[in-house]
Image 1 (cartoon, rainbow, N blue to C red):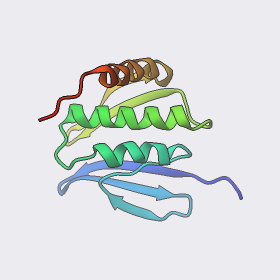
Image 2 (cartoon, rainbow, N blue to C red; image 1 turned 180 degrees about the horizontal axis):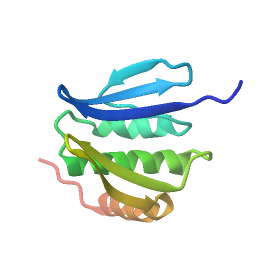
Image 3 (cartoon, rainbow, N blue to C red; image 1 turned 180 degrees about the vertical axis):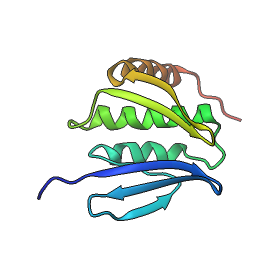
Image 4 (cartoon, one colour; image 1 turned 90 degrees about the vertical axis):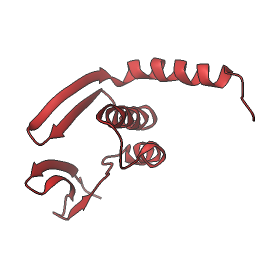
Length: 122
């Protein structure tokens, strides 16, 4: 098996936003949600649980951040920085760059706090 490549392309025109996945054979798919790369199965699990059509920009950025973190944490061929950009009608804005290893400690602390919280039943 040879080297392969996949990429996501996002843009905005008079019809609104558009997201495409393009693979190494030139196949182009339009959709609302994609995950690309060797860690994509880990990222897609997070996206499947957290994606809603009406996410705010902040919620969408955090969902993207968490999905990339899980891809980098569980896949030995992934890692490095988590770069978050927002693409809108007027162009793109860089939201953040974070070290995926540092996110591990934040997310671990959050999950530990949730696990130790008392269960509320009705």
